[in-house]
Length: 118
Length: 113
Image (tube, rainbow over all chains, first blue to last red; front, top):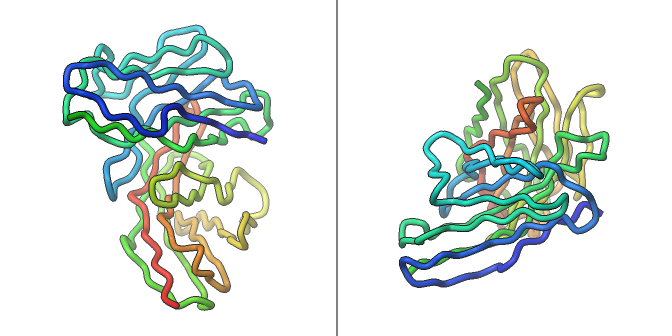
């Protein structure tokens, strides 16, 4: 149980285009999902908290117009990188909290999406 | 503010040897503590977690961790390391602040044959 998937796992795009990354909780409901960014050999940096049915909460320094987050259902959150540029190239990881579990603070992570902007 | 320090950037151990990865945290209340493992190009897998109760926590793959409040530490241990344990290990602290977790910078584990 507690499986989180991400799609796509790899994406290469041209500068200026937009890319959508999906994060799904496959066997549990997640009212809260988190989006992280990870640079090579570095830790995870929290970008935003995605709340089902409401606006995402962005961390300081993260451009909300650049990284659009939509959490339309209890099992799906999407991150859209708009007008992507080479500096947006990174490994994006989502996680989901199982809101029905007693271990409400436990996050389950997706396998990540590697984005390369040319 | 919560923070996590993993003092060791890189650790190398021989297969079969014991392992201890250090983690120190800063948090104003009783913390929720986690250890995750990440293989190259993969997401994070939860090894174990501490919320309350017994300070010695058992996890998957033979790992355990001990919460020591007096030292603000949550070190990860394994008595005998296998080659497949080579990976990046992250310690994280979280709380009731909307479930946010703060991650350490990670420790890279290399296992020598």
